[in-house]
Image (cartoon, rainbow, N blue to C red; front, top):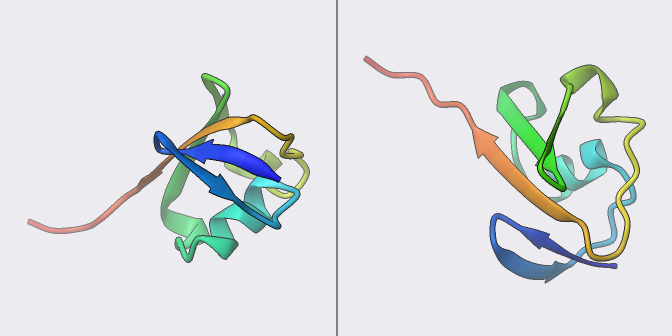
Length: 65
């Protein structure tokens, strides 16, 4: 499936938001996801399907001081 992730076109095998986060190597506990301009709550990552042409924005939180 071909989707856009953070502005870049990519081919992915993931079929859900959670699977995409894992496929891209992000820490599932520290990531926020937007799908087609709508925030996907963390509680719905495992059940939110991806579709060809989706636009995904991923933001990973980092600690520091």
